[in-house]
Length: 523
Image 1: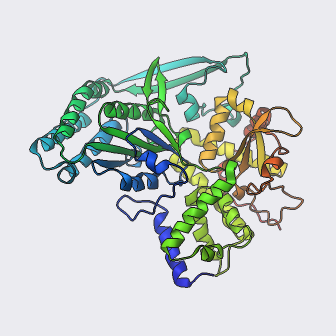
Image 2: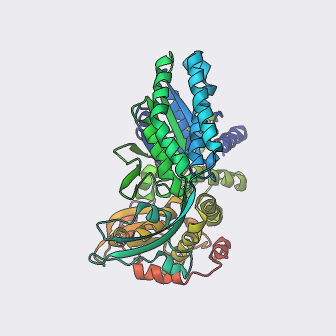
Image 3: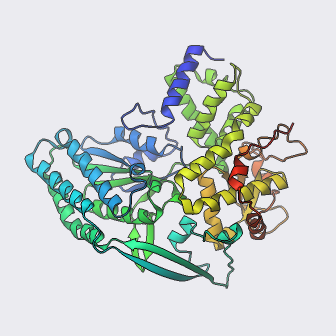
């Protein structure tokens, strides 16, 4: 094992780096592609990745690469998590201009007029925030959409998993469709319009942009602002496109560029409301930056996680050989599997393993024991980040998929690509459970050895079967770290629409409680 002092320093550095804090010591972002130059460029971007992949670190670290005449302003949407619309937009704008005012002297030079411009903008926003919604009215809208395979379900419906909350679980997600039959989606919504404030914000936008142009013309030091909007997914799903829309229009034709960081399948960047586009469109209004890693290319995912651990090791004055000695056999590959390839999960499990190892190197079985509480942890994260009206659906999905894998005695299953293409409900379910690291995308466009069609492969999280101390004769694990994994996946069981619907109908009312109850270890 490594020197005790070095190991203690490594633990401290990783512990402090698990959560990146504004103003704290920033670990260097390990860039496996072109994320740093892209996110530092004068262009609008959205960074997509699951929790723990380094979105916040990328935003913070990129500020070191900005030109001298460019400054970054960081806003975290978690600060506005439960705020109502349109006040949430007013509060985001107030925070933006408050940051500008706070850096006025250092960034822009002490000119009286620049201070007056900012003070007037902030005062106007404060007045709007306090004003009542004079034209608030409840509207009950019944929407019936005929959706064919060529016309996808409305973005808001599919993205939110907005299935009815009454009736059996299976009926919540069931969405029958084929090449010739239309889906009839009946969804009744009650929402409130806040016409006064929205109209005032829209009418004020040209004047606001004019004042900002004056502001930049007066500035002697800063000629460009990078607006970093972190964790957009914390805002209410129905508000996200409106917030993105206003930010996009505010930045347009000004030396301000937005960098939004979020979870792809928990975000609505763009929506079509009654024929009017709201938000920002990918590759038209912004460029995507994907920093996520999946089991589809496990070698790349493992390499990225090792580079991150190596960076911490170098700061702790540990050589690569000393780091390698902390693992035995396939220990590190198994650690990456247990962490779902997500760096924060991998590092967190690593710290836990060091505490329990009694000075011994971590092996495959040590990681198995550590991963037994994975599902409980991830359900808690799911409940924290998802909205109340979709949690039952997601937890039911977890229960159904775990039952399927335990019954079929395998960790990998195939889903027909045709099933995902024709049903936004199923597609959204698998995407969201991948976001929460319950299942892991392990392959696409795969063919099955005995059944026609193409399939996507998913691996259930290792925590779902970690109670098997020995799997021989009880459970078939396809080790996604092995070169032959893709070929073995072609013989994995197929989860059909009928089978998934049957499993969902059988989900018990105490599914969450049962999922959190560790299964008895089987030798």
